[in-house]
Image (cartoon, rainbow, N blue to C red; front, side, top):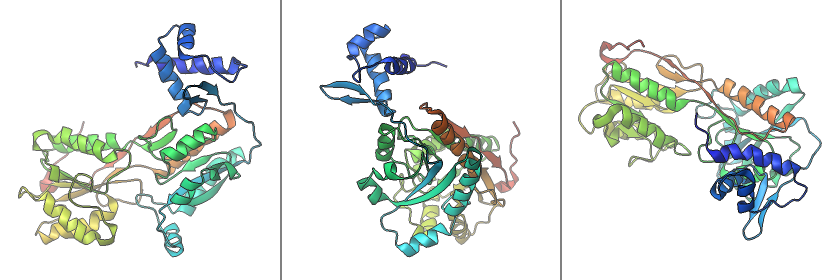
Length: 369
């Protein structure tokens, strides 16, 4: 695979920095001449080093090496879950007792799983539920915790926190993809590949109208999903086939799912043709089935359902199935490696998803590849 020259320059600059006695690096042109590359290549490589927290670039003053401070290990990792500012204490206690959205686990079950995974290295897990506003106003919170690194769950990580942790050389890994944040270690299921394979197989089986119904995702998730639908449906694609709150007049509202699902299905029916397959997030399936039946249609004979899930207990519909436990295990192993080996490389791991097929409408059969 092609590797940009500035990526190849990064480890050479790191080696150079380790040998440097001065805290300030030479200028870009001087480094370009020394390494035999052009100044633009050096600038791009130094931007990566800055994102990793290895140098600090001050306008008009130059680039300075950020020396790592050796600290005593606490032999613990913090599992970070940021919660909305509006949560009351009662709502938070109720939320902790229930699985979170797509997750089949409660937060305490996740802590226990992480604790078991890191015990072999003599580490233990601490569960940290934090108010988003409080953390934003006091990022030093992450320095003061008696932990050696952080595991971010439920898409809690944001750019502000990531930048702070990198500059402070505090190890962290996200248990979900972080497309909008550069230079971040993460582990996640490969949802986009699974959806691509799913739609390909449906089209090969002769399914002509496939729609999506769900909430908008972070970091451009919805837009990438929408592009996959457009690719596979081609000229047959219509905007009202893809309803996620970001590309439709509906705003996702978990408080009135029944009404929201009925409105969504009415949008899907704008061309007068019912969808043959609806790809739907798990919590909306039952309310959407009710909306389908109100139109006199049967499931799955007329309209079949599929979902994306990391819950192993969903069996009665077609499932693009991932494994949250494996995501967490791999994320913990990566975090421990960073902590124990002082590893500042960035590895983004994708776990494949299985497609567990159920019945298709009108007795259509899947093409076996």
